[in-house]
Length: 245
Length: 222
Image (cartoon, rainbow over all chains, first blue to last red; front, side, top):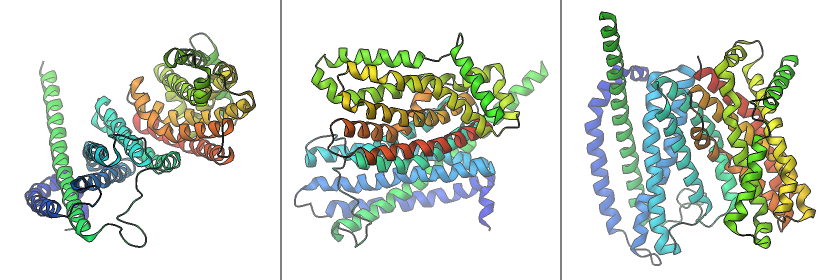
């Protein structure tokens, strides 16, 4: 079956309904395995057990950024091809990405208390995640205020693209502004600086969280398609009633 | 080019006549700067230290305040539809409107900034460069805000939604504007690098702002 068939909302719904149970199962298994490894991972010699926050914090940060990437790709689909499924994908990704960004900030602040001695510092990486969260709120606000789903989706798509252009600039300027957070340490030239005993559970957890994102994304997309159908049916019903009188 | 100038002159004339919002931003700017010492205390040494930051924040809020009217009135009386159907590319007409908006609300802020700087005890030797950062940076605020104004008018909303959309996007301008102003005032970092980056941000927003705003209008108002 060609990939293009997925673009039909009805086919998409059948495929999602078939795939979701599998995705949920695999996600659950990965979380069980990942959490087991994470609990058995050695404590850090400096941070003690607090280092385990990393297994939630780092994947959440990745997915917070992935969410915006997904929204930007969906935005291209909305603006260039006017595809309704792209609208739905963008709308679904916004709250999920915002939630992961929020989780990243909360776990980071809980992690910061024992290690840096404070819940919040105006450090570059924290601040740029905070700006990302505020940008997510802007997109969500657009969806809330739009009376008609299509119009809100196009407005949000433009904001997503503007944000995608702006985010690297914001990141750069905030870096320039202040830096205390440790630099990226998993993916970097010259190999990872994390010990394998911590890295392997981290990667499993990252995969589990990514699958969780995918599961939520598909489920939210399905709900949104159904919600739009209900809306259309209600409109048609109202029209019929208006025609009868 | 004639159409561009005509639109520019029309918008400026409208802004200065009765019901226009010109100079209201400058008035708001003065009031915000007057209110801040009441909150912070009259300590001149403190005010001198945070003066550039206060001026920049005031300018940011003042230029945001006036953005609401950028497309709203034209949308109400239908002239926005004429602009969209006209022969001039929508990007250009949007840019003309933004330029007129900056000349009537952004430029007055820059002009009264030295006076307010004096009241905040900003050192005279750095005043010129402080004003220069505002002159270079406020167009970026207007042209970034342009996108938010276009999105808000397409959804027939304004006010706080506009602020929520635009403010996070202005973070880089604020950072480099204040950094350049502080570099001019106290050092030790040189004035050049942050100021040139600020100019770069402004130039980029001059190009990208109208394109995104025109796209927002086209997709939102059809």
